[in-house]
Length: 209
Image 1 (cartoon, helix red, strand yellow):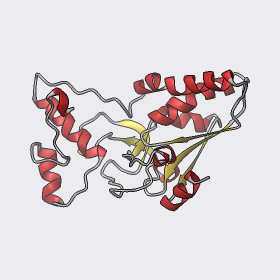
Image 2 (image 1 turned 60 degrees about the horizontal axis):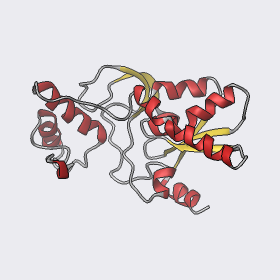
Image 3 (image 1 turned 45 degrees about the vertical axis):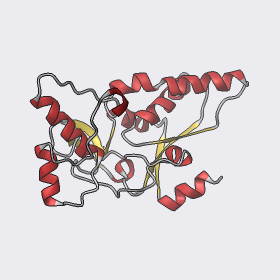
Image 4 (image 1 turned 120 degrees about the vertical axis):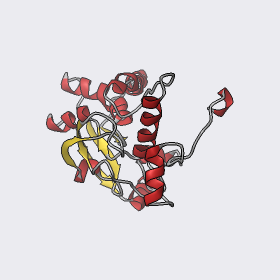
């Protein structure tokens, strides 16, 4: 970003009302993606020359992310195999949907019958312990209300936790949302996939298999 002339501000920052309010309440706030979204939306709303584009969380992102699952299907076909189990990480849901939705399509069409599991961190269990309700997609409540499994839009997870198995295998830290995409929830309704929550040590053990 900085290579192309952008200036990067840590969130929460002192340049937005949202950031200043959060820092006043907690000067040592670790921040969260929900806070960063609130600050970005605030900046875009107050500046006519600024646009806000969200590349995760919302349902339209799923269409773009499905290239992941479509490529996986082609790779499996190339070696004459079909998966027995598909395990995907869940944050806001777009990565999991990108992997699983093409396989769910094949499953609903009766072509394959894999077990599909969405794995989330026990430190931020929106799927397994969240409430199914309308909530904001950011901390300050600037986004439209959306139906979701939510832990509350003011929920802030631990600064470092096992965001998901896939990211952990890449030794990266994942940002975890307080809610999950509505379309993911329908997968559970139709019994096409199930979700589980793993603690940090559970994810580490799994990554060592």
